[in-house]
Length: 272
Image (cartoon, rainbow, N blue to C red):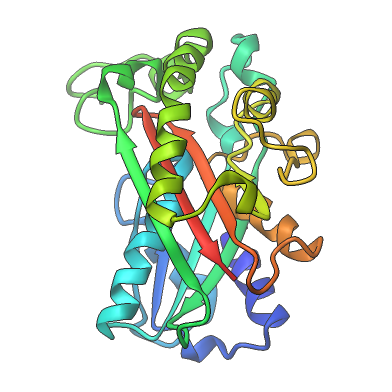
């Protein structure tokens, strides 16, 4: 899935695969503990031998975190053209006995290729905040040093667990003030944002954004009914929908925003 997304992005913009000098895997669900997922992608991606690769995992907002890191690396001149790929197979970790979470997820992948601009477009603001008191509300317990064959584990430790109501309450209590801080950093008001690209967490979360945050349906990109919650791939897939639908246009600010396990809040305001 990751390589298919990469190849599609290269083909759409007629970009030579050999010009990619860094691949960032911005996924929430790794292929395995070691090596990093980027290495697995590079193995079959057809990029130049020796192309650098590493992972960034901040759960559902990994794409925003990767964009932040990529911007810094591009501005220092360390790399010239970076492929950011989010690919998640949520279906591999679903607990089908847990109705609340098993009904919301979908598999998917999306890729963005970024490079240093000429000053007419770019990132106006980005903001990531983490409130770890909610870390146990959304988790997969196994796969690391905490739950493993030596430390002890059960089969369910490898499945996704979510305490949805508590998680929604925590996120809802934080999101309005967070949005105000993100907009203040961008120097814009919500009315000036042409398109809002949210993490497609659930139908309830999108309705909350419409009603509590006063984001109109015309501005909000909502692909949940077609794709579900694709974990880290959710935001870039929604961004792709915005681009193909003509809602990502030069001079018209676009906001990426989402919440993730941790609990983390992340957002970015882009000027295409």
